[in-house]
Amino acid sequence: MDDLPAQSHQGTSQPIHSGEIYFNVDTFEFDNLMGETGHTSQAGVGDRPNEERDAKEETSRGSLQRKKRKTEEVNQPSHQGAQSSDAGKGPIVPRSLALMSRSNEELFRAFRADLYEVGRIGEEYFARLVKSMDEEKARIEAMMVECRKEAQAARAKAEKIEAKWTEHCAVYRQLYAKHDGLLKAAKEADEQAQAKINQLEAENARSAEEIARLEDELQKEQSERAALAAAWATQTPKEFAAKALPDRETAIRFFQGLYKYEVSAGIVDEIGTYGFESSQYSERKALYGILQQRIQSFQPKALSLPELHSEAPEPPFPGI
Image (cartoon, rainbow, N blue to C red):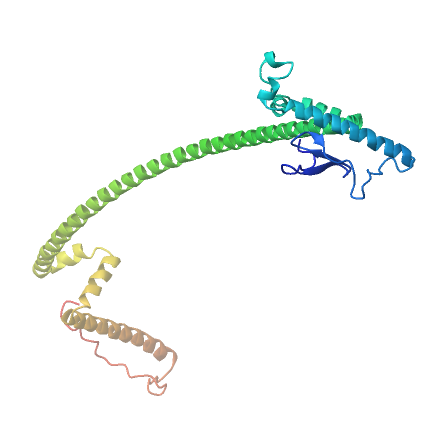
């Protein structure tokens, strides 16, 4: 019924087909078949003679009057119906209630039959009215099919997303397990390294204590040895010199130690000076002897040479 034009309120008429037919929705009858000018519509009959139109209008009026009388008889009160010839058959059902029990298609067919009596509606327009219902039903069914397809597509998409997230969750769990294993391994390695560090620190502390003890013992031994060496050098200097300085390197280290003290350093200098002067005297004496053999009446002064003394250098102390 959605495709039909809007109907009027009670007691009024509303055109239902191209502005030509007026139908009362309360009595299901035609109220007026005339236009505003007092004549029926000219659509479809513009080329007919006026006589035919007048005859058709008279026929329509007669049919309308007959239907109006028939409707009044049907809708009469129940006490009037009891006086009729059908008084013993029960109360008469109003036509409006009878129409309510019909289906939409039956109402359309009855509506078409009523309109067809006055020649204003035919099979084509009725088929279009019925077709509009079929088209609406088909449209709704198509919408339902489309909604079902969209729901299925949304469900498939949701299932794919769920599978994807399930896979990601499994991967994340594996990564978490791997990371947790690495974290535990790193923690164990850190604990082992810390234990090793503590062990090495303890050993280092013990080593430092041992080194300090050995240094004390060495210093004590060196002091005792120095006292023994001093006594040895004082008591038996020859034996000390023979055994304490067995090679050049040892003798050098010994004299380096002597140069650190003033008394021993002065004695070393005196010995060095005596050795230098002794070597100079020996070399000069040998040179002058060779020159006297080669030069007659040789005089060192004539050649700007120092005089040769007859005395040899004296040692700083005896025994050298």
